[in-house]
Structures are given as C-alpha cells and as structure tokens.
Length: 191
Image (cartoon, rainbow, N blue to C red; front, top):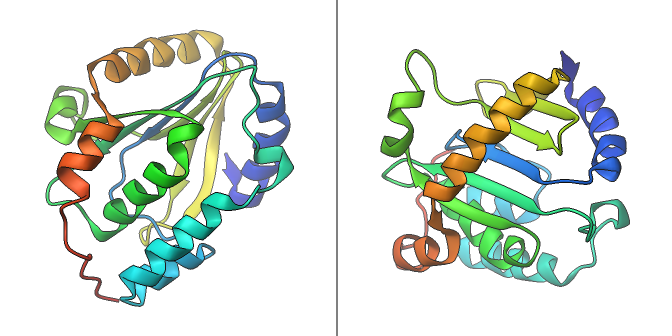
C-alpha cells in the first residue's frame, strides 16, 4: 500500500520505463480535483469559466514528464452510470479537449460490467505495460488517497486480458461524447 505521495513517487519512474500499453480503468463517478482550476470553477457553479479553463489548459505544454512518449499507447476505459454526475460531465469535456490526442478512450455503460461487479465495483486501475499495476484508492469524498502496487505478472496479464475485452466492447469516446455529453445543460452542483 502506498500513500498518495508515495504513489506519485513510485508511478513516474515506472511511467518513464513503460514500453507497452498504459491502461486506465475508471469506475468511480465523482472525484475531487481541488488542484484543477477548471474543476473548482465547475464546483463554484461557473460552467462557462470551467470550459474556458479546460480549453486554455489544453494549449499549455504541460510538464515535460507528462508529455506522451511515442513508445507506448495509452488506453482508458470509462465506466458511466446514468444520470451523468457533474464530475463525469466535466471529465468528459476534459477528455474531449485534452485526451483525444493523447489516449484512446472507450466508454461502457455500468450495466455492461454488472456481471463483473458481483459483491463490489470494479477498481480504479492503472497498468504500466506488463511490469506494474496500481489499484488507485480514494477516500469517501473522492479525494485520491494512494494506491496498492501489484507486481505479480500473472495477475497483471490476467487484468490486461480483461481490460482488452472491455476496451474492445466499449463505445468510441467521440461518438459517446457528442451524443450523450454535448447536449447536456451546465451541471448543477451542490457543495
């Protein structure tokens, strides 16, 4: 088990060594992103400012260590429940503006993974190639609290196989975004 800071300290060196697919599975419907100005604007009820900030951040080069290396593919699977939460509506706009050029994103309705969620929801996962996997953890408020690092290559290989199936069965992000997210009114947030 790693604290939030230990996770980041462990993640970035392993990220730089990734030479295969970086997988991300997102299941939680609401996170706290207190360090993100666009998220803060959305939480303050200023949706237009939030979208402008997302757009402005898209033009920034970002940290060099986070620039997408060309040596591996990034794939994200986003599980979505209806109705879409304000966080998820915000995240989908972030992915549309930032993520589309960096990663391949597929969307699955929560009903499509129900048979995999007997007894508990799917975990939040990050897999860096074939060497390391993290089950990323969050507290009850949706704030990142750390991760469980998994090095067992058989477990990682099995998870990669399952993620590949989910990804293959998922809907292309852009089609989902245009149909389900773009028409939505500004999210109503209650603090």
